Amino acid sequence: MKINMKNISKIAILCILALAAFGCQQKTDPTPDPGTKPVVEPETHTLTFVLPDGEKAAWEAGDQIVVHGEYAKDQVTVTLSASDISSDGRSATTTVSGLYPYKRDDCTSTLYAAYPASAVDNLKHCFFYSAFKPVNMQLMAACNTGETFNFVNLTSAVSFVVDGDFDSFSFTARKDINIGFSRYQVKITDQEVNLKQYLEGATSTILSTDLVADGETVNTLFVPGGLPLDAGFILTFSKDGKSQKLLKDKEEVIVEVGELLDLGDVTDFLVDAADDIDPDLATSIDLQGNANSYIVYEPGVYKFKAVKGNTDKAIAGIDAVELLWETYCDTEEVAPRSVVEGYAYDEDTGSICFKLPTPVKPGNALLAALDKDENVLWSWHIWVPETPITDDTHGFGSFKMMSRNLGALVDTEAGAPADPRSFGLLYQWGRKDPFLGASAIDSTDPVTFAGTAMTVAEGPVDPETIFDKPTVFFNVSGAWATGNDNLMWGDVERDAAAVKSVYDPCPTGYRIPGRKRFSIFQSNGSTITGWKFDAANGVVQMGSPLAYFPVCGYLEVDGTFANGSAIVWDARNDYESTKTSYSMYINNNESVKQAVTRAFGGSVRCEAE
Image (cartoon, rainbow, N blue to C red; front, side, top):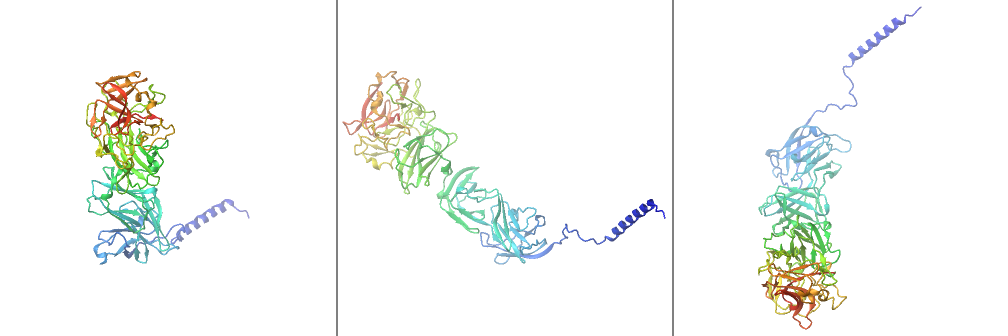
């Protein structure tokens, strides 16, 4: 029989279509796709929330708790009412609907809770994690045991009272220990507790505007996790974004999770915030040698070893640093902490640290190291010139000399009244500590200053006992010091091997000049090339190239000013007298070598070493 292939093809197609139609009609109760999850109905549970020990002593009506399973989209916010809370406030029980328990094989926990709801920042797929954004509140989390949530503390706390004009504060863990975060995630199940499962935006400082500075209200700062303050902390108070005062503690403090560090009333322990100086960021200015005076031109943080002047003898017993005085060397009112903005002692390196503001304010300042009883152990002159200091021989000899007096902010110039900023500071012969100069050529008033005023005491005194009296001027006709030490400023011409003396006030690289090194200290100045006395402007010029000396006055032995003349000290004593030392004495239209009373307060023009 002959087979018709066209008919077979038609029949086959019809059969296939019929089977397909039959199959569609039978698929009324399909087997669930193994790749999709069955529909889960929300559950209702009566839950009990139990507080841990901590700053939050009791639940309050209105407290809100987030309860979730696996997904953040299914989390429920529970608002407690007064009727939910137990009589002691330690637990609260309420019925919660809309819950989607999360079932796993590795733990029996099925629900998770976090407090406060306002801080919860769970991701879409939150599993058994609870995450928080930063808030100043006690943070808690829990997993369920049946219908009960026993909350776990996630924070430690710091509390204090303060009185002052502040609107915010910051708490910093020293040595960059992280205590704050932009997002804080924990993992809690019945099998595992990880209170810092994930930290985002870690920082060593927590900022807060939640401050009441009335001297009575207790302020509390909550910190995620514990507080491992291995190197102490810094508590800084600010106003309008600017740091004002701070409390710094370098002692180790360990605060466990759930514990409180109570600082009490910190008001009396605050210091100026400018004293928060990191010695690791400070520039050493004593690398070329130790001194009683340091020259600094630029803004920044600086440090030098706390040693006795031009020696390497460390000073023991330092408890603090104090700014004794500062001046602009004119009559402008001096704002405290304007020349030296901040200062501190770093006991780890044995260094005095200080900070100059931006921009710098040219001037002079005196820093002192104090013991625990606030006695001065040593003091250092900080010199911030307005213009650079230069050196030249000026034809006075083969050695170079500074272009200005010690402590002068600018060089003296000819043709105009001498600027008091060019006068420099004044010294009793043999002493390291400076005193303020006159405010004008014809004035008997000192320049303005901020800080401790000069006082006058009777002498003579033992030079070994006056280091704690850097602002005391000794009144005596003759030598202020007992013992007749003729080398207090190190006479290199008497002893060529003499090192710079411990009393020498000149900065690193300079020293008190030797008399025979410079013609100005051993002859009549009027015989020197270029010599001219400009009495009207109070300036003497001499040498080649010209050097200028202001007729800036000096301090009499009773601490009062004598004007119309000047004393410029050298290192030489008058060995025929125990009361006088040599100087260039400028007076009556001349400048001459002259021995004068050591207790006068005269100028110093340093020699370059």
